[in-house]
Length: 247
Image (cartoon, rainbow, N blue to C red; front, side):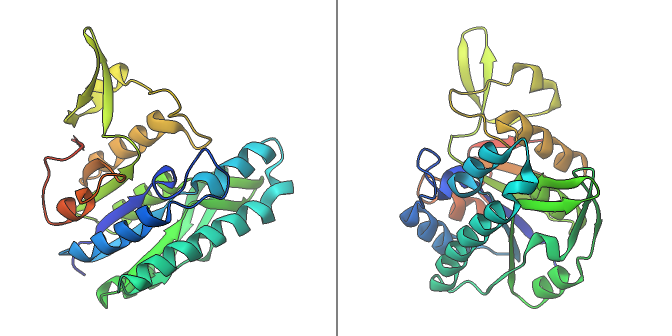
């Protein structure tokens, strides 16, 4: 199997995080078209944004009570993503994460990736998403970032592109906050959280910690602004001078 590219569409990119259940339709459809620039097989993961996160906040103390509502919200968003991909001519297949992943204590402990690999080998694009999961202790959240990291490592992706709603990773330097063109584990203490950047699945720090695990596993990582036209297409064509490269 050719080494795929893992693309993660952040929920804050494809939805308006300030308005519950609000889709950024033009952004989503444009990103779907940009995926046609891929020169390698693509595995796509998307986050929950304003579809999943408000409900997680509401039921955070009792996820079991909100299990069905959160799951249905994610299925609803996934159907919008799939419609955009199909209109763009992407041969995408939706896979509920619970159909191939099992959690224990909030962490992935078992998976069956035969179908994912089968689809990739045949030129199709598997699409999955962060969701709520039953596990041994009740119900847990599997974020899109954790799922993307897991899949990229298990599928030996050659590159993972994370589309977010900022230009990359920002560092708190002596002269102020600056955009990092490159980032490594030694820079973690200087990581700057921008106002409004924290979410229920860990915010930028949680995202960066997942990305560093990818780098440790031999996957190149690029963090780009998915709200800016053309960046995803350029990244898929091999441009590494965009956003923040993590090494």
